[in-house]
Image (cartoon, rainbow, N blue to C red; front, side, top):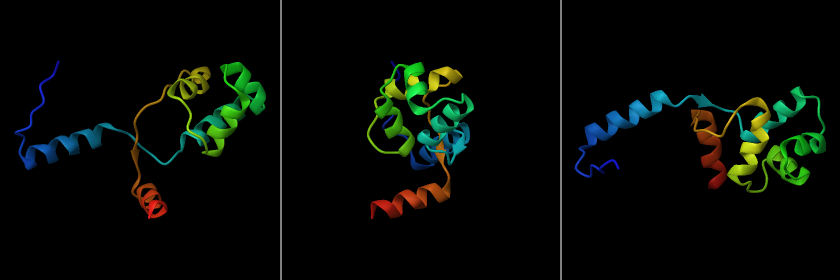
Length: 104
């Protein structure tokens, strides 16, 4: 197990943060948009794609519309036909501003 270094100075923390940001790809795409595009590529309706993935049609509709709170396993199932998985992306400055303004 890796040790936690609580004695890191602010310069080292900034360096580590910059390194992490350079390794995480940026994206403006919401997961629902990605899955909707995947479904359209397969030429399937929501109910057909949901059946293919083994999820409820309502769960797929909620993901595509950006509502609800899907489980990680549901997202993984919806991405599986394209050999994709859930990952981490860095939000663009525009997306960050959008999300911050919607919270306030």
